[in-house]
Length: 104
Image 1 (cartoon, rainbow, N blue to C red):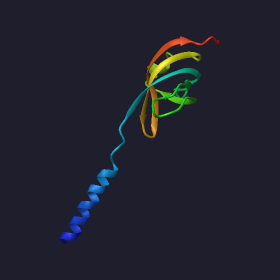
Image 2: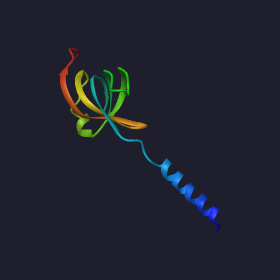
Image 3: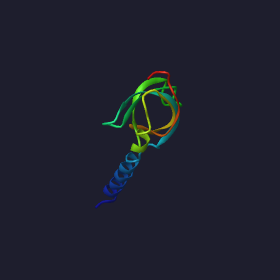
Image 4: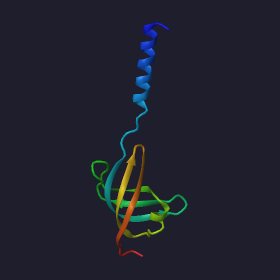
């Protein structure tokens, strides 16, 4: 192996290692209201306030982790939670029910 080939292989290995790093996991506080629950997929559609610099206020579906967090939720619950973002995945955890809406 020539010196030039060795340097090229070393550079390729360094570049390959740089591309394999995951972006950091981010956590954001969330305030919202449960609109829909899907027990089959452990997802909740939540009408939420702005979530840090990550997302504007809107209504969207979130996976709820772990299952023990999902089972305590009911449609109409007002919640405080943590949104975990591990791009491209995201989910809700550490949920506290803070109240219920007036809707049945």
